[in-house]
Amino acid sequence: MNFFGNIIWLIFGGFLAALGYIFGGFVLCLTIVGIPWGLQCFKIAGLMFWPFGKKVVSSGRGVGCLSLFCNIIWLICGGFYTAIVHLVFAAILFITIIGIPFARQHLKLMELSFMPFGKNVV
Image 1: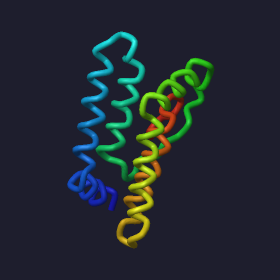
Image 2: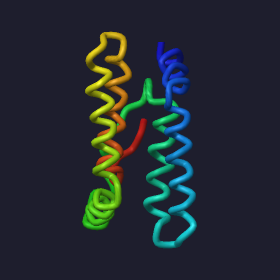
Image 3: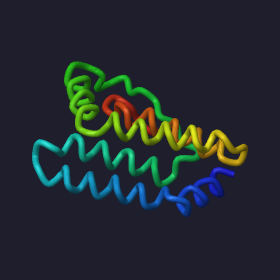
């Protein structure tokens, strides 16, 4: 069932959104300073390609001061906006019964795009 959900997800926008995250990750990785944030974009893109059957969990490592600082920078530079967009799409999809599984995936993506440092996708 996860396979079909992922295929439908890719057809209806997941592929283009993942390409956007990959492009943003490459742009951020062009500078030395932006590499940590670019790697987080790649992590989100991986989840954006195949969200069904994966979970976002907090990692035991990397939750210190540096992770908090990077998450604050992430929030200021677009993470808050991205999380709000995922929340709006989840609310729209929750209206229909058939959209509920896809809304749940948007909530998962919202959690990761809000504060990606210190989180892993399994």
